[in-house]
Length: 328
Image (cartoon, rainbow, N blue to C red; front, side, top):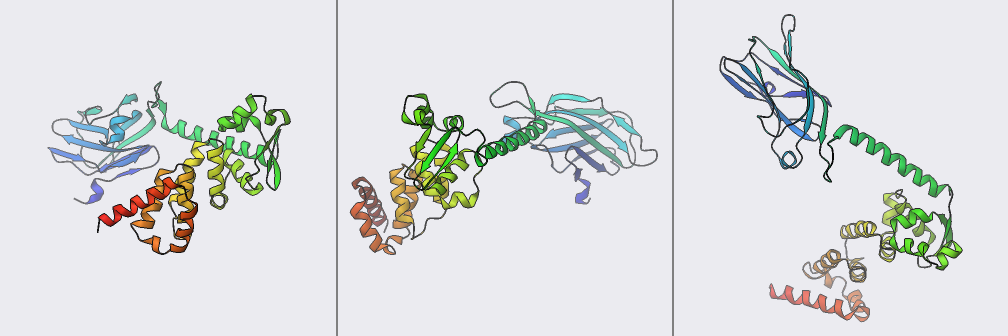
């Protein structure tokens, strides 16, 4: 029997399994097919009655968040007048195992036939609890809402729509919005909640950041930063994230700085890892220097680094060196 005998053809919400004539006692299970978030199977078992089953493939996803399905299932004879047998519509039935939906068909079927499943909806329970939500409506609505919101925030920043605070960088100024800054940073929120000069004068002085880096910082806050802009200003963004307590930006910078450690930047990365408490970056830099022997490639720079590094960091480096020597 060819592999096509087990293949289920699908569109986004429709699945069709074409089956040749079954012997008098036969069991057949389809290949997995994907509808929504899950892989599914159809199976047929023919004895005196033809049993049709529809169920999701067993996985962690199925166990943790089983689908709640609404669907119409039909068996269509593919010869003659294409007679169809239709099961009454299934609505909001949770499917976990291959016994949760079983359709017994007593009408004898001969020749080739098609099992046709049209998924009307698939729902899951939200992780935070509550009523089940459609995965399709949820995804579409959320994507459109997020895209529209980000576009609007970007326009507010780039077009200066109702800006109510000025940020003074080291070499220029730009406008922003108190509410957005306060929502993204507890430090900004504190500035605007107390009688500080930032609240009184409607200005924020960020003298340790260039205007280009400041624009990148604001673009991140407003959800409009590009990859090239981010890469060009990673260290400035890391400093700003630490200074203004924006943890998600700090995490993004941390992940990015882990990706391209080399001899030209490893000592700077190590210094920043210590300064901003980035343990994974610190570990990666020390492994690069010690375990992979790159400390010899940056010997002159490393000697200068030791003259200005904090004693605690120097102690950690030599501890790493001693551990490496023990391995030989």
